[in-house]
Length: 290
Length: 184
Image (cartoon, rainbow over all chains, first blue to last red; front, top):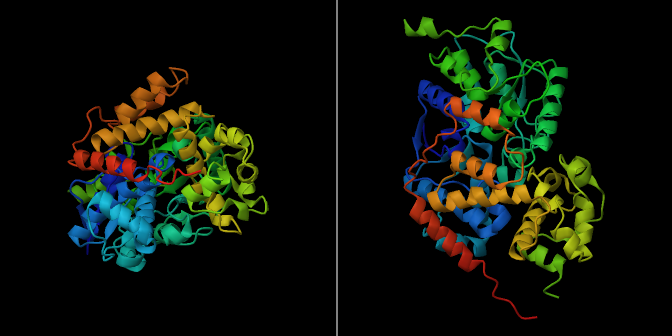
C-alpha cells in the first residue's frame, strides 16, 4: 500500500507528536507514505476570508503534485484534508472554477487521484481486523472519548467521510486496540478553531465545556484527529484536573508496543503519563528494544 | 442593483441568502453565537434587507469559526459559512474597520506569511501577532513558551521549494478576482 502524504504545516510544528506517531504506525504496518515534494500550505481557515479562488488554488496545487505522483493523497490534518477535498470537489463539479484553478496552478485535472482522510486509510483500506491483529498491548482500562471536531465530517457533501452527526470510524479503531470508548454527544462540536489567538476566551469556553462533558461521560482522555483541536484542547483548558488529548495514532502506536511512545508524550502540553499509569498501561518500549 | 449586499453576497458565495425562512437552526447550533451581536439567522436577514454598514462592521462575520454546523443543518441548504466568507471578503475590499480587529489581523498575518514562504510559519505569525494586536502583551506567554520548549515552534522557517510558485498563484488569483462587471 502506497500513498502520497501531505503533512501540512501543523505536523511540522504544533502537531509534532501527530507526525512522529503517524510515521511510526504506518511504517510498522508497512503502509508507505511518500511525502509530496514541494508541497505548500493549504490556506487553512484564513485564505477563504480573502479570496474564494485563492482558497481553492492553494490546495489545488498540492492536488496537482499528487496527480503527478499517481498515488492517492492522504492528509492527517482535518483542516488540510477539508481544504484539499473542497478543491477536489470544485475541480470535479464546477467547470468554470476548474478552468480558473487549472490556469492558476498550471495543470490539467484528470480526477484519477482521490483525497483520503487518514482515519479511512486505516479503517477501510488496511482494515480494523488486520489492525487488531497487530495489537501487542491492548489498552484495557483506558477510558476515552473520540473527538472529531468539525472539518473531517463537515460539510458532508465535501468530506464524504463517516457520518456528520454520529461518526464511528475512530471509535472502531479505538475499540480494536482495546480502549474503552465512552459514549458522548460532543464528538463533532467545534473547539473554537482559529479563534485561539484572537479570542482565546471563546476557545477556553468551548474547550472547557468539551472537557467537562468528556469527564461526565467517564473518560480519562480525549482522542483527536486534528492538530488544531489537539493544541486547543491542551492549551486552552482551564479546569482541574487537566485531561490530556491524544492523537489516535499515538494510542495505536502504544497498543502496538512501538518503542518511541515516551518521546511523543513529552511533546504534550498536558502530560498524559498519569492517565496511562492510572489505567495500568506502561509502554512496552524496553521489551521491544532488547 | 449591483451595490445591493444580498446580490453581492450571493454572487461571491454561490448561495441564495433569500432562501432563509428563519427556522433558527443555524443560530441554535452555532458554537460562538453567545459572543456575536446578532447570530447567523438575523445576519442573513440583515443581508437581505441590505443593512450594509451593520453587517459588514459586525464582529459576527469575524467570529464565525467556520465549523459548518449551520451549513450542515440548514433545511434550505444555505452554506452559511460560505456567506460569512463572502461578507468578510466584501468587508476587507471596502476597507471597513473589522468588528473583531484581532481576528482579521491574524488572518492577514497568516496569509501574508504563506504568500512569502509558501507555508505557514508559527513563530513569525505568533510573534507578529503579539506585537501588532491589542491583546495584552503577556497573554499566552506561558503557553507559547510551553510549545517552544517542546520544539513545536521552530524559529527558522522551512524551505518549502514552493514559495515562488505560491506567489504566482496569489498574483494569478488577484487578477482573476478583479470584478469585470462594473456596470451600474
